[in-house]
Length: 143
Image 1 (tube, rainbow, N blue to C red):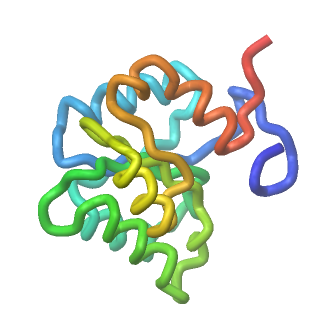
Image 2: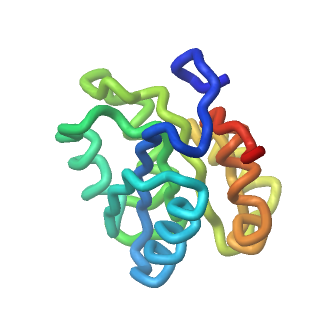
């Protein structure tokens, strides 16, 4: 089931926000999302810009945010914290998937404390992004 109460298929309009300061990574994530049928993808190159996009989302709230952990200006942890604490955001409970180059137990613990729904290393994301998004957003696996 999706957070909004009904199961989704790959053809439903799912909106995603990709936040990463590395352009090739954003392009790769956009491509992976499109292969899953997610075509409404917004991008930000840092957490500060992503917060501005969430405040001004004019096409409805995103269904998922995929965010890099290590960014200048406003990193993934502070971004999560800002989203969860901002009472003016209608999407405060949006699932946030953080991507980390390397992560140990402490990184996972701190990310969860700050409001991340899931933390994946980039290596794990390359393998399992589709599965994690299906679980987080409620996308049904293709038949």
